[in-house]
Image (cartoon, rainbow, N blue to C red; front, side, top):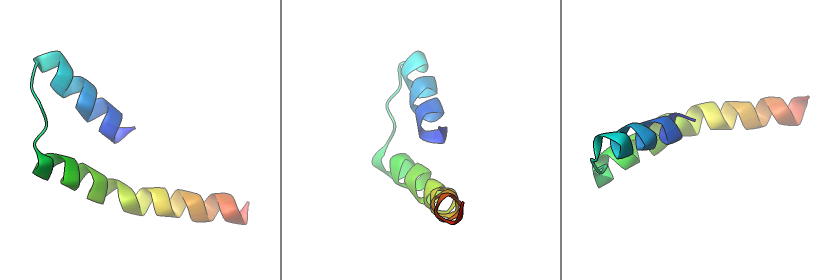
Length: 43
């Protein structure tokens, strides 16, 4: 969701995301995605 929002924002502004920005978005999303996966497994 966050990645989609950031990509949409940059596209609307006519900008492109740098590789470093993309890596930061992915790194910030790994922990919440992992927690969600574990919770889904438990339920």
